[in-house]
Amino acid sequence: MSKLGQAKILGGIGALLSLLTIVPTIGFLLGIVGLVLIFIAVKYIADETKNHNIFQNYLMNFLFSIIAIVAIIVIMIMSFGVSGGMSWVNSLQEQNFTDPGAFWNSFGTLIGGCILALFVAWILLIISSLYLRKSYNSIAEHTKVDLFKTTGLVYFIGAITLIVIIGVFIIIIAKILEIVAFFSLPETLPATPEPPKTETTVETV
Image 1 (tube, rainbow, N blue to C red):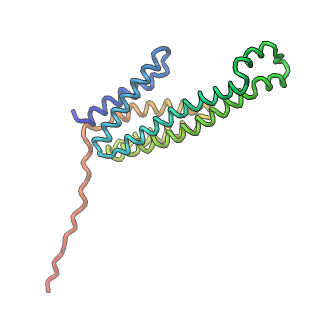
Image 2: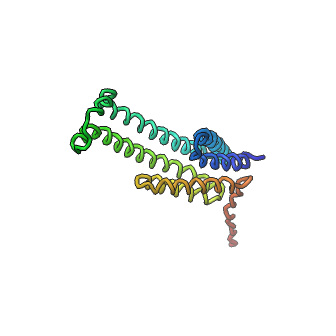
Image 3: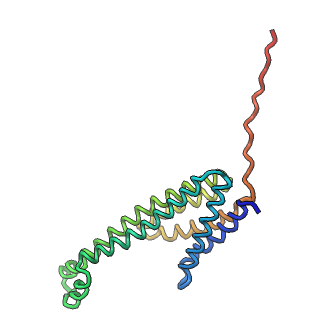
């Protein structure tokens, strides 16, 4: 089986497993396995097409996604520390939260940190989706499976609209399209048409 044929199977199964991340308990493990399979599939496609930007762009997409998660955790920890840490948790027992002023004094910093963390992660995920789109556009160009272009575009739209929640559903649609796109890969690369030969005419004197 060619590398492209292997990428078809590995990528399709990997995309399917990554969609099952939402399954309770084992979803996280399925998501990791799916991600690894997609990575291998994209690497095979990059090797087969001799376009290593395909893999590099997909890797950048992954790195920015990880940075987004790390940013949320770091900003939330910093907000918790600025709020007072464990002493802030202990002081909550003495607060009267029927008073709006007391509520904001206690939770204002933490809420602000949450908003900042989500905004930074949102920007990073948009950048991540741009790299994913570049990778999938290149795959579509080489394999003639235009569904990869659609998948990349839908991922990008989903990332932009994540801030209004609807992006979650759009990304799920993109995941489904991704499964179909990988399973639509051909076994071999389509033959590129040769440029038309120009006929030279010999002038007679």
